[in-house]
Length: 142
Image (cartoon, rainbow, N blue to C red; front, side):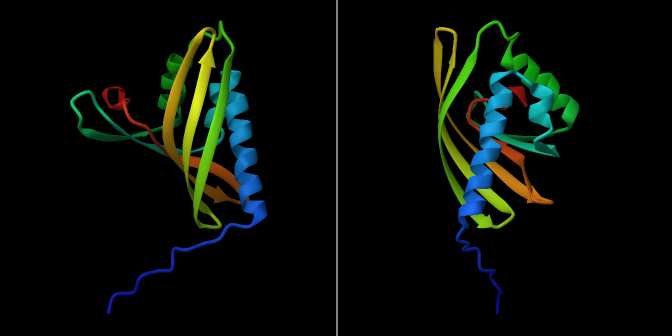
């Protein structure tokens, strides 16, 4: 007989509020291009999952230095403000694990991009941190 763990978990209002507060802080740091501050909200090594231009799935693990270097390059020089409008759908696997699906509109200067991605977050010592980032189209950079 195979034992399958019960993976159903109904989050408490505090679970959802704490996750929403974490994303508000992460978005604020992103808007300021505070890449070191963004890294403070992660668990390293950080897992990344994407696909490449050939259509193949790719994955990598980044340490903090790689995250900071890559995100500094991606975020740009800060000449234009960045704003995010996001709709997030969290799926709590337990009180300490959540997969969060995000549909977001990112605006920088006159440029607007639609983004869809997922993050896996873990709660440690009462604080959320992202551990896995999943988004299509970045695999050639992994």
